[in-house]
Image (cartoon, rainbow, N blue to C red; front, side, top):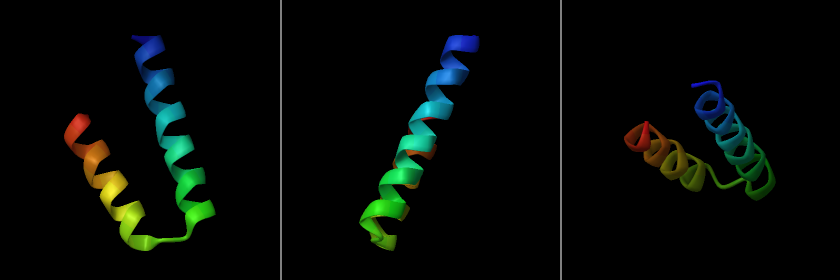
Length: 39
């Protein structure tokens, strides 16, 4: 359980950094929509 939570947090953090780096709002939206489906 803890490992799954850690992996999820790390995935979200990497996604956040990627969004900051790319600075494409549309891609951020697509990423978080995909995350919502996965979770």
